Amino acid sequence: MFVSFGMRRCRRRTQTPRNMLVLFMFAMMLLSPIATSASVADEVDAQRELMAQATEVPAEEPVAEPTEAPLPTEVPAPTEAPLPTEEPEGELLGSFEIDYWECADGYDIANPDLENLFMDCEGVDDVLFELLASDGVPSSQLTGEFGDSHVSFTEVPTGMTSVTQIDVVGPISVFCNGIVQHGGPETGVMSVPVANDSIQWNLLDDEIVFCSWLTTPPAGPADLIVNKYACPEGYDVHAQDADPMTDCTEAIDGVTFIVTDDDLATFDIQTDTGDSQPGAVYFGGLPAGDYTIEETLPDDVESAFLWDCTIEDEEPNDPEDLPLNEGESWDFQMTGKDIECHWFNV
Image (spheres, rainbow, N blue to C red):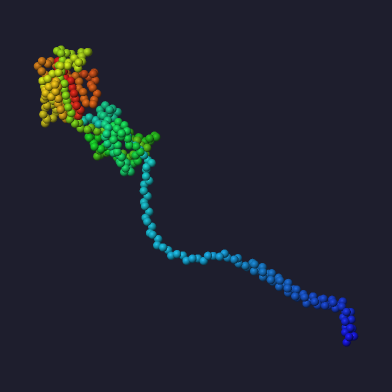
């Protein structure tokens, strides 16, 4: 056995080079499918991994679960939108400048000489005027507050405006001229209708309305006094140096004077100098109107003349106009103002 075994080992060793090659080739054949299988498996795994990456869905962000919507509450019915109102015109302003005049009873206030009113009429203070603006806001003012016999309403809203005289004393005539400042239009002087002691004017922006407000208050009763004097015999009132107020100072009583008017229903008034006051006749409470006064000349009197008369609140007579009248009668007018005269006999 031992010999036989030894012989086999010797044989195998002698066959090693060729057997080793065969064995190597056989081993390679056995290992090649395994390597190939491993390589294919690796490739498949790689492909699967690429496909997995390509088809991988990105993770979605967490979405809050929707909460249940609240039930709708009752919605109030829409209210009707207010109609647009006119935009206030508070910034659009004008003004009124009014001169107030009282003219003598009988003066034609419908056709006045506006340039010379001061000659025929007089301004009066403390006369109340009221202005009602287009926005319904009233304002009032007395003449004389901002100028003699004048009222001045400024910053008046534009639009239809009324101006009213309060406590009217007689018929009214009003003449106005509306001038828009900075080269605007001008109405020119025009007669403005008067109704219920008021005028209406559509005031423009930046317009100043200049008005002359005329009235003729009825004259009340007034008094007439005539002072009676005697001049020296042959006295010449037209002499250059004649001055009966210093030349004739003798008061005379007992001379009769009669005052008459045009009204046949009234009685003539007769009185003598000295009856009510020394050397004079007094006719009190004469209503406004036209009159004639006549002297009954005494027997020893040759002529008579009226030198001058002073009317209450008026300028004295111009010396160039004296004497006022010559003769025993004189026509005059009572206008609600007292009159005092100087009457001379020669």
